[in-house]
Image (spheres, rainbow, N blue to C red):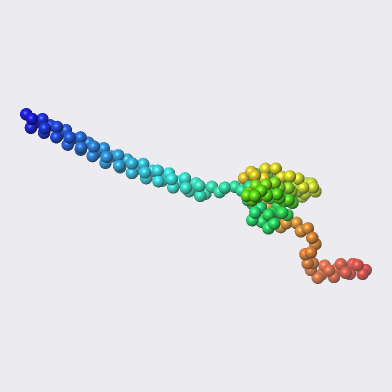
Length: 156
């Protein structure tokens, strides 16, 4: 009888081992499916991160322009027909924060002649308006034909 009992216990042990083995096989296949789904989700979020471009504040836009953008026009991306011609910039030590002043332009025409402090310079929505900066001096060379016409008008 003892032999039968030991066989029964051994049989139960074998049965438990086989169930345990089935459990590990199904768990590993489920985890591999979950891991492949997790990898797919991670790749999708990486693509989203790569495609989403971080907007820039005024100083991050101005740092690539000559003389930190003084004399150039900038505007917020959601403004229509309004821009600022930058006249003065005070930068903090990190180069990404500070204060800025400029002349307001509405539809390309200066709305005021005195510079005013620009609000919202740290908001991440600024863009460069691609126009040449206004020339403050008249040192640009004139063609000879206009020089001759001016000379003729002075002598006549």
